Image (cartoon, rainbow, N blue to C red):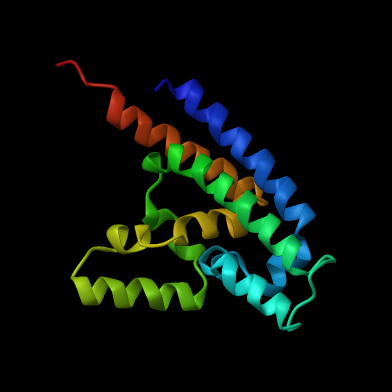
Length: 158
């Protein structure tokens, strides 16, 4: 892929992620991206049937399912360019429970931090939560994507 194509995908991802963050801000603050991604849709519907959560409304089951679908679509966009991201760059923005998860997976399987970060949806959730809405972090992420693309695709001629 050309660098221009990757940067176009990155910018499209950011626009959609910002719109999603604006539209579902209160649901994301209450539940969190990781919990919504890992929750089975049948569990959400069962909770709505048992009247633990409302069916409609801003915080209802239908809005959570709509959010889950949009998050999965965004995650597919993210995975198109996530090869050019280093998980270690996102580590400072990881929440405490995610950090514990990474460290336990790392110890259990004797992996490095990069491999442990790729387990689950942690890279995506961290990018959605901390990087997309902050211009400085976003520009730094784009810079790192450009650098890694150049390292992968430009061979030095000696």
